[in-house]
Length: 129
Image (cartoon, rainbow, N blue to C red; front, side):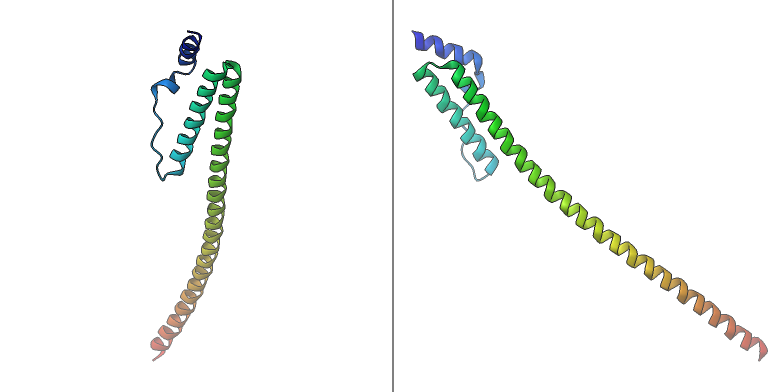
């Protein structure tokens, strides 16, 4: 009777534990982590029913969730760092390409001036003849 009361209390405290099923483990790492996390929470629930230590279980579940969140945050930080590094590299490459285009533009201006000068000289020679 006491265990049944504890079970009802647990259902009230953590309804998601009693209405969810453990998802199938798939090759996806995130799903594997979630499945493992859920299995650990279920094990902690089982320990509670056996030991009767509700506050200890709550603390363990919170710690488990915090650890999982910290791991997820670290994974996202690593992805963000990689993305930032890639963006910096692309920015540097674009700066170099811009400098090359500026140099090419300056060369084209010089060539245009030379051609214009040559054309004027040629026209003057033709006018003299």
